[in-house]
Length: 357
Image 1 (tube, rainbow, N blue to C red):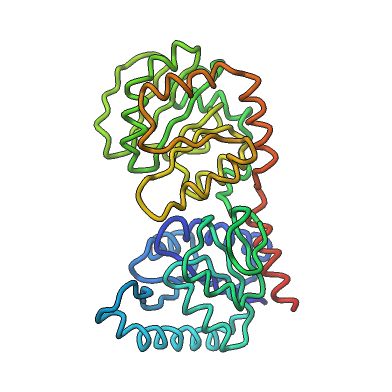
Image 2 (cartoon, one colour):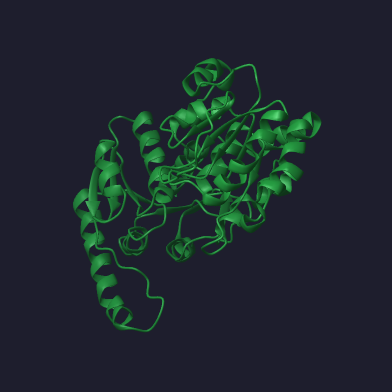
């Protein structure tokens, strides 16, 4: 029996691919011991036990960003975390460590190296986090979701995705999806969404240009986010919803997407072969623009800066694109070529190779 220790967490971007790989390992071999290493504070503290996996915890020790008291205490706290993970590796008989970034991954990489246990790194973003930059230097395998991610020894493997996305049969679900959202399965559908909390820029732009979308012969599924107060005009063909817990149905109905460009979002849209316009989140380290870059280069998507997305820009650029079937077909074909649905299997193959070394 093989014992796997999957390390990562903090945010959904780290937890979801970790869980996809855990599910893949369990589906392949029900006797495998799949353990998860995370922190008590992260999203994993709730999601991992809900999925039926044992969560082992390690102290959250952020890398210091500036010289202060926390920076002075970092070496001792980090080495204490490493020692704790080393004890876990020995006591649980861990055969391989798989890291997905985040606070739990860094001590796991160091502990694995000191215990002479192979470890594999997966990076979800085009701009890698510090834990994975350091981990990649000694890893037995490094997988990245996006081509060109600057990590040593990186191999593009795609994103481990939710099973309902990987197995989505959009044509078979389209009628159910249309009924679910109160739309027409026979009409082309534009899906606009900005994440669970929504995106004010997207809501403002399409709140002012929804009629132009409908006048172009399309219907609009607009997921505004839970915190939005965008009014619903109650017009046929324009579905305004605050939150969607069945994104598989939303994607099954979507013929075109306008969204933010988080790593998972871009990976899912590409995997499903849906043409898109991405509007990267303007705050942060610029990773959302980089996440979308490969799809843009391939011709599968367009990029519009957050500050530039206005109702007038929707009318001038997005509405004409909806009317251009040849261009949308070319974008859809490009998305189908660049999308990867086998991210989970590809990461597991890296793990198998690490075990065979």
